[in-house]
Image (spheres, rainbow over the protein chains, first blue to last red):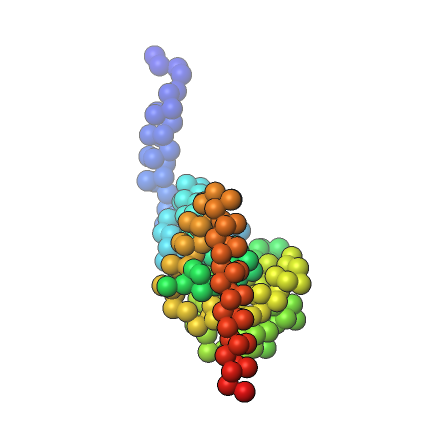
Length: 110
Length: 134
């Protein structure tokens, strides 16, 4: 006779037990899950914002991380793009050198 | 605490997306006293300049405090001419300046001396011409 329960046996027993639950208990469990998820959303403002705007669909630790990672990646790349753009268009070092040089500007202008 | 971090998050996002806009709008009245001093020759034309050119001149104004009296005088006398050039002309001038900077020091000094002599000659001939007219 089998005396030790395997993990899958416990899982199967729980599934059978869940199938036997009455509707009232199932409703209570559903409500408890919903309240827990709402509470979890309130705890993470970034994710709540993503949910509000339809950028994240399923709550959970992995999606939290992906949502945050995506948001910070956007911020980071926007910053890098902006400063690269500014740097590429900043000729002030050379302009000030021309404008204060010994030679007149006409020397360099066609 | 959660509300505070939510607001901080909104502000951060807003700041990132508004950064390029904030860098663009620069009317003369909004400039700092130091920027206005550095860009004084452009006070009457500043608001008509393209935003890109304004940004360029604001970059030039950053160097102003480090300039000596002679450099400031040169900057003032050349700024208007510089602002009237086309972007292509300014770019060509930058390229020429870079190329000239790579020429050996002795040759550069020789060219500068030659230009000074020419300037003195033309100034002298201008004075002579004025005397002849009188």
